[in-house]
Image 1: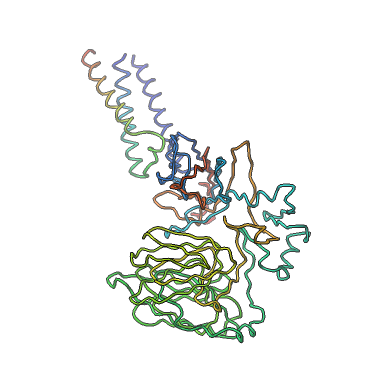
Image 2: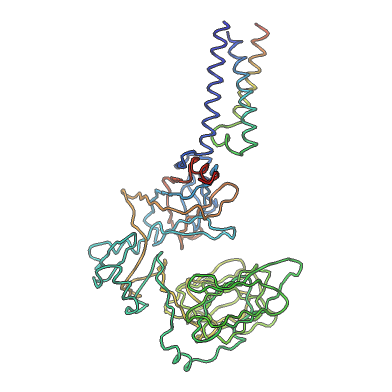
Length: 473
Length: 58
């Protein structure tokens, strides 16, 4: 009996020891690689369910009816990269050409998006499409007819191709750095009026252009709530490199000057909370084009606001009841009838004019905005989005890093690799987003995406590499 | 025999519970991701009750 007792004790305590070793192995991932996955109706500690609930349907909460949806990946340690494979199918009513997957990039809830599916590009693959493609080093160039023999040849001759014939999709072509015949442009355009930029709220970014002139801006910032200790900064970028930075100080003017700067486009980014208003921006610069978004601050005596944009879809939202209004976009009227709700309108022109009678509205779009037509210039190449029509827009070239994945019947599996080393990890979890622009949960259309499986393969440093790093080998 | 088995199970479940709680305090979710601690607690309590019953008969 004593021998039996000892043997039994040895066995069950050994099992406990093995269980503990197993848990420690799973936590530290000594070889640096581990895979987590989840299927419908399964419960996983590591991959959370899709949310928010009002955009998810189905018994297993795997049917996406609204955009966007989120899920988290809980991990016991950090990793360098993650291969996310999503198996999904769309129903026949889904008329959304673009689906994207993103990872949470920073604490400001910005996501780094990558393409999951692009039906616009997928249709180019069809034999009757008339498009030719070539793939080199993960980059695909689509041409309407084969003019260039290689992507390198296309890039060498980029300046000879009209910019409005080229579309990019998750590939950055070198932005225009010089405005051709800028002298003639100066002669024909009016000097930028210093009071034509209305008061702006919070953060914004804009392009400006310098040619044989200094960078010279004066900003005046005020705080709405003086009890908050808000901080902000102004950053100047030239060719994606930070060349100057200043802190935002409220109560007084801040001068931003840089002399003897090389010719080209500069991006000025103001980072500030919504408690900070830019009351005034003064500059002798001719080009001031705001990037993607402008938040018009609410003032006591609003004036008529005129905006020029090349955005194809314009979004408008207000939090002020007395900023509800009708906005004129080209010849169309966009009615903002509710606060805290986003309204949108498509434009049919490459350049549109927006007129607002009241401020206190946030205007956003996929292009640039300026407050006079002379101040408008977009140095970037056009990007493909869900509203792109390559035939109507007369596009002849598309350059992209998008790769069409594998399909089995209606189910498709796409794999995207993310850099997790530079991603934001909050409470031991990486955040992911599935973006289906245009998919609305509260419309009457029965369109959805059904998720079959999410699998994530993580790679990071092994324990040996970590020890070597600590011991400086 | 039942008493001996139950007593050993009681001790191993008690050890498991204490070790798992300590591991959870050091590194949250290291155990919970795979093992439900509530289940371990319930099994330990059940083994304790069975132990008391079998002990009185033993």
